[in-house]
Image 1: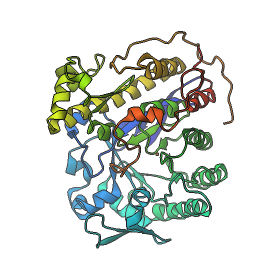
Image 2: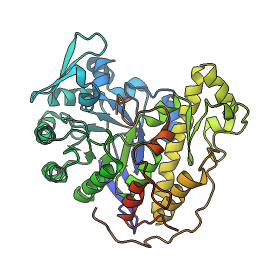
Image 3: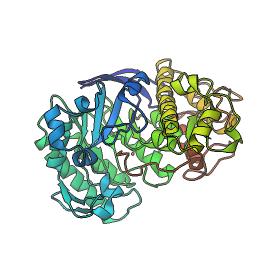
Length: 445
């Protein structure tokens, strides 16, 4: 793998890079849609290419169950099996220790899962077995098996998991049979404890991997704890290697975390929320099941050039949803992935022009103020005053299976009023204001 930084924001920690992988050169910051078992729900691989997806994600645990390691090895890997010719990343199966906790038993040997399908058969997923499965899958980037605990866990279990993840990392490297074809990323653990995060980064960086993931987040912790942990890790991790924040997919999180120096993201959110009829737009989301869209003959977004927006109306999709037609999920999924891809392109473009702070200010104003009280799908609008990059600067101290529930929920609109709901006098969530201020961006007019 070759990671070449193309541009850096002169105000924040954001950067654009080209990540040359065996199957494709991905441009970062990059969002990776999740195809847990070798399929993206609602989309074909041809459509994913048309949407300009650079990397997709698969899950080791689920792929080991179906279609199985032997079949994938016989076919030459998941790329051939699913007909995908661009880059791929596989999660190690570690997250299932949280999402399938009642079906698992964790020891130093590994984690033993009882099948959630029959409740009888079991599988031991050790660091070595996780790597063997991922070698058979053949992804460009593979992840270590880590001991994952909920971000809400406190006490000695967090430190135990952190040290075990370090020991398991060494076992993963020792078992890795294709280091020239597949890039093994460690996963930084340590919960919300700054001391443990620092220890974990220090130990894992010694292994000199090609990239690093920030794990153990997006599990219910406060947004203030979330951004501070992300920022701490990006400060400590090598500047010349990619940083992957696992399980992040909300638009506002992608913008903030890019400002904090993150390069890679994955989440089931865009396709999962599409199955509930929620279409993503720059002002939040349109709940297309609602009656207000019954006679709305506009596209989801006038500014979107995806197939759905070019060919179909909100009214048509509303009718499909109420008729329980599966094509509705298909059409909204196309749009939502297009939305994510366009957002990442806009982030990269603004960094290349060194206009990222102004982009962030415009994005946040549109997201939280331009569509206040309505969801009209417009992506136009200007904040009252554009602030020059760096004004009010100064640094402050300051997470994949259809991953069994990360950033779950029917309607993301509620996310604006749940985690991180506290609004400041400027009308923005306090955590966003603080996170952006820590890297030199003020949202104040």
